[in-house]
Length: 258
Image (cartoon, rainbow, N blue to C red; front, side, top):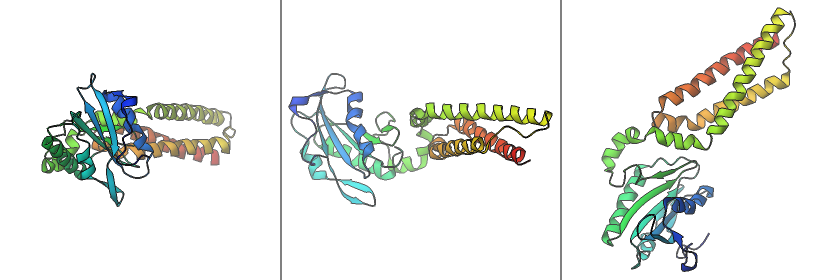
């Protein structure tokens, strides 16, 4: 990691100002175990302008949180800078902003206003997705209002983004569990007709248990964000599958022991 007063970007490696390039610069924050805050300066408009610099400005960690160094923040305002993006990571968590994040955004925006520089965005780097204050229209959010309405504006699309990376794994788990359940049901039915023990081994049952455990863990990891986002249909679907598989587990255990 570079020193706080040393930019990751120099005149020798100019980067075009696009949202994709900004997010690419911020992605490494996901690998950090502690919270850090960075500031990105730009010149010109998105799509045509240039990313000038990126500095770490966080300091004084307290209980896993980071306090931005305002003096270092002030130093990024050179004559070429027309806009600023601030960002910090949420280690081991989602990108949902806290009330502290809202307050910090208002403070940082005021500093930019004082320098006649546009405060473009505050981006939180979560474990699975990015939260953009600009995209969510939260740059001018009133803190007291936020405390009351946060769950309402935290739209389902955020939950979809959070699940996006894992969606293929989730669908694969469902397919494996469903296919196994149908296969075991058929075998149990045939074994009863033929008056024999089901041809289902202890290894088969152990694999089933492990797969069910993985599915439960997946739901547990995402239930909070699904609940906040009020993505009720997706949440209900996931819970329904798990209940169905748990119910069948009891049937499976009963028939094997019999």
